[in-house]
Amino acid sequence: MNIDELKERFIQNKEYTPENINELMDFAKKAYIHNEINIKEYSLLVRELEAQGAVVPESFKDSLTQNTK
Image (cartoon, rainbow, N blue to C red; front, side, top):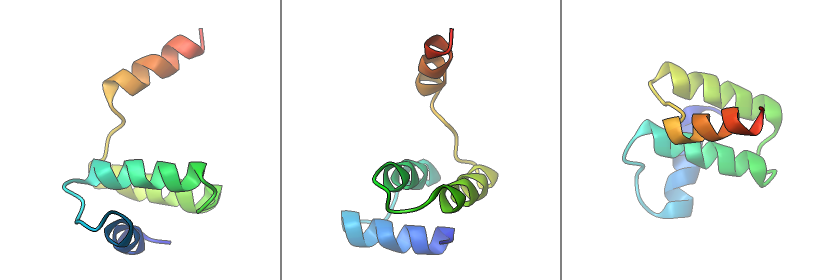
């Protein structure tokens, strides 16, 4: 799956166009969590999305660091 396919899937599922690249990142994460895409697809999508400017929210990064201590 590529970003264009992810975007089409998003539009079909949500019935609106994503407002920004971070919405697609969230959608990809949910698809992975729900076993709709595999780890390889997810990793490739995340790399592509990050290259286009998607970011993980600071609050999410903070919670990840706290859980590893």
